[in-house]
Length: 370
Ligand code: IPM
Ligand code: MG
Image 1 (cartoon, rainbow, N blue to C red):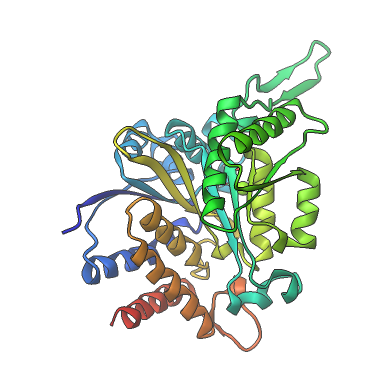
Image 2: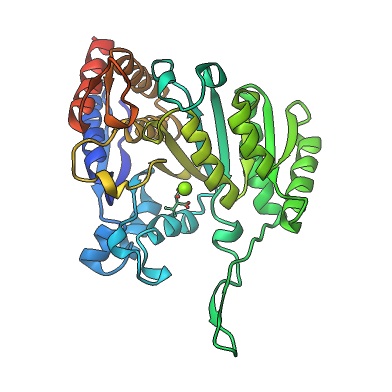
């Protein structure tokens, strides 16, 4: 009954391929038991693509991503390519995808699973019930601003330059995503910049304030300096609902927020583009954890963030809320049953590897649906 959706799978580097294998099991289950119809293509990106094709991502792959209904991304980054020029780094793959598909709003939820409360380095009372959503701008700011580069000065010393730039339009479209999300959550937005030292931050604050007055007067808005926000996230994270910020601050604060939950290995993310005339929007889903080269290939990586990224994909791109909830519930139940990968291990729990964890999720899905 449901139409076939085009899914592009890009496992990438490090633990990407091994955690993606566990998603494949979940996909197969949904196809067999829930009538999910997918047309799946898989391609190399990052170091894996550099090794085979000499580039971090081929133009053909960008084109496939544009055609797809959604992209499921693993992670890129490989120490073997750490010393090549910026245009040939594995990371270029994700940066080009974000930029060429105009995926400007990166949604990074940080949610504490009750069963994992002891995995947090913070006291349980500080993080119990934590549920925040960081909305990070991802196609502008200092990541893409011009001028940029490294130049040699007349005296032979060198100078590295990057530029933080934001336009009204770029700020407004990402702030809208944050306000819309807040309305279906706890109705609070915290906007983060450094308006005390940066003009781009001052403009950010003005544009967000103005947008709220015009369009979202019902949503509570607070402004916070980025450094204070880092401190507040550790001191009292429960004060936050939705946070909206630029590319660089969002990169830092989302890693910080992720760690409040006890494991980077648990957190999914979605990066969305603008809604097009036909109602579709480009979207890419990826775990926050990155390629983790130190544990790659050992079969010990936590596949749950990748599996939960696929759940987000089902929710936001394929309009399959029920399946998304099913996966999220299965993950919760598996954790409650005591299974743990190394990154979230705690006393008295059963330590398992990547594929046993994936199998456990599929088994739980079967139970929930049965
Ligand atoms: C992230 C990563 C990327 C970023 C890297 C891999 C380019 O750290 O998604 O947070 O800095 O945006
Ligand atoms: Mg990052």
